[in-house]
Every structure is written in structure tokens, then in C-alpha cells.
Amino acid sequence: MPTSNPRSVPQLFRNPAYRTWSLASILFRLPGFMAPLGFVLIGVTVASRSVGGLMVTAEVGGIAVGAPLLSRWVDRVGARRGVLAFSLALTAMFIALALMAALRAPGWSLISGAGLAGFLSSPRSPGLRALLDDVVPKPALQDALTLNATVSEFAVLCAPLIVAVMALSSAIAVALAMAATTAAGAAVLLTLPISAGDPHSPTTTRTTPQAPSRIPLLRIRELWFWIALYAGFGQLFGTVETGALPWARALHLGTWGASTALAILSASGIVVNLFYARRPHSPTPSGPLRLLATMTIGCLGLAFSPNWWLGAASLGVMGAAAVPLLARASFGVGHAVPAGQQAEGFGVTSAVQTAAYGLGGALLAVLPIHWMILAGTSAALVTLALAPVWTAHQTARVG
Image 1: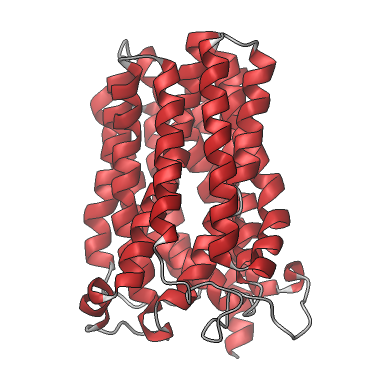
Image 2 (image 1 turned 180 degrees about the horizontal axis):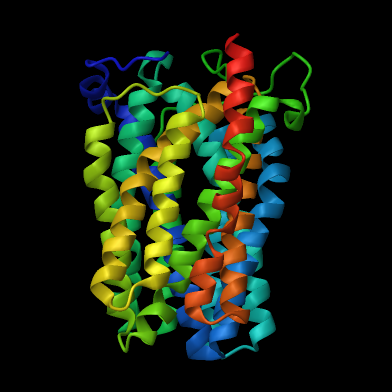
């Protein structure tokens, strides 16, 4: 079982490459966390609530389509170069969305623009995760993932608040803020030492083209558990993040009611992960399944909550399990996927997570808000129901 090195966290803080990578990662994540509330707000302002929900669905659909395809290209050219290229294109797309909102473009064009934005953003997260293997030494990888999962929650915490502040001006400002944070992330990543993630550097071994033949990732049985786990996680998060604004409005609250509830979701994750940080990670199903069950209970609590306070408490339960779950899932996928196919592997799980996330947005367009939240637990319940299959496979591997 992997263990945690008590000296690796101070070493990470002293590593300038890791500090640069972590800051770029936070800036790149901000637009994605702003998108659910931001796109719903743009849709409601320019067209209708249904357009806002379909914008979220189109964005995550673009991610689901693009992640496994474009991540292979990132593996070929190098993680750093690939992430930079798509970040510049994404910045231009967010500016185009702001112009479309200013011109009050028809709903179909807003939905199409959101889908293209998702497509262009899709390889950035897998590319950054693959790049991390070249930024920190392998013994420090567990602590790097846990630390980044905790720090990244500040992006989750800030994103809905940024949307709420920008909304005081206009919906156009939300899209421009997404463009600004994307461009800032690209600028930070440019300062990363060229040896990290550069396909022409002799020190880079994991995020560059590899001579050994590639294997179809879906033939890796161990990966299927993580795919199912990401599906359950993605639908749960897509449900609560996309449904936060309509849920708050159903309680006669507005944007700040939704933003504050989502901030509680993130803050609880930050606090709880401080206790989980020193626990060793293991690429086995039992721990992640318990965390997924906790998130499911929190989502069910939100569906049945009669007021904002109980709903916010339910979101706090979800956040408490979400951050350690993501850190363990990222570690597990990295353990299951061969070197040289890391970006592709994280692209597959990203595609599954975002497709499930998009299902939450789609349900907003066809179901009342409380039924939408209840339906958002379906993928997680299926994954949990298959727990005997996952644990039996792990027992067989150990045996």
C-alpha cells in the first residue's frame, strides 16, 4: 500500500515547478467551476432557463467528446504545449460568448458556443494531470494530489462568488471573467520550466510520446471501476451545481443564496481534506465507495430539504466526501493507466465525468427541481450497487 512521506509536503512548497503548476491548475479550473452557474445566468438573462441548462449540457457534452480525442494529441506533442494551445483557443471562445450575450444572440447560438467552449477545454485537465508526473518525484505524488485537491477547492469556493459579483454588472461580465482566468492560467504555465512536459527534453518520460505500443485503455479491467466512480461523482456534482440557482429560487432566494450554498460545499471539502491528507492512498475500491455513498446521502438530503439551512448542510456533507474522493480517484487512475498514455487515460475519465455531469444539466430542462436533484443520484446508486463486483475483482487481483 502506498504511504505518505511526512517530508514531501514541505518539499512541495519549496518546489517552484510545483508552485507554478498548482497556480496554473487553479486558474484553469476557475472557468469550469464558474460555468454551471454562469451559463445558467447567461441563459436566463438572454433567453430562458432551459437555454441556460442546455448551455451547461452542451459544454460538458463538448468535454465528453473532446477529452479522449484531443488528449491523445496532447500525449503526442507534450502536455505543456498542448494545454497552452487549447487555453489560447478557449480564451477566444469565451470572448466570443461575451459578444454573443451582448448582442442577445439566439438560444441555439449560445448553446453551440458553450459546446465549443467545452470541446476546447477538454484536454486541459487531463494534460495538467499528466504533466504533474514530470513536475514532482513519484514518492511525492500522493501528497501533491492531496494538496492540490485541497488548494483547488479554493477555486470551487471562489467561482460561484465571482459569478455573483460579475452578475451585479451583467451576464457579459461572467463570460469575460472566464476568458480572463483562462488567459491568466496560460500566462502562468508559460513560466513553468521547459523541462517539465516538453517532448524534446531528455528529463521528460511520462507525458511525451513513448516507443512501446499503445494498448486500448478500455481493455484494462481495473480502469472500469474508476470510470464508474467518475460517472457517479460527475452526475452528483452536475446535479447540485447546475440546480443550485433554481433550487435557491424555489426557496425564494436568488444568486447569492445559490452561491453561498455552493461555497459551503467547497469549504467543507477543504476542511475535511486536511484530515484525509496524511492518510495513505490505495488504488482499491473500498475507500472511494464509502466516500461516494456519503456524497449520495448528501444529495438525497438536498432533494428532501425543506429550507436553505438543511440544504446547505446536505451540500456540506457532499463536499466533505468530494475532495478526498477526487484525490483518490486521480491516484487510482494514474496507477491503472500505463505510462505514455496518462493524458489519454485521464481524458477518458474526464469524458465520463463530464458526460454524467451534463446529464444533471439536461434533467434541469425537463424535470422540476426537486425531482431533478433526486434523479441526480442514479449513476452513483448503480455504482454502489455494483460494489460486490468491484471488490471481488480487487480480491481476485490480490489473490
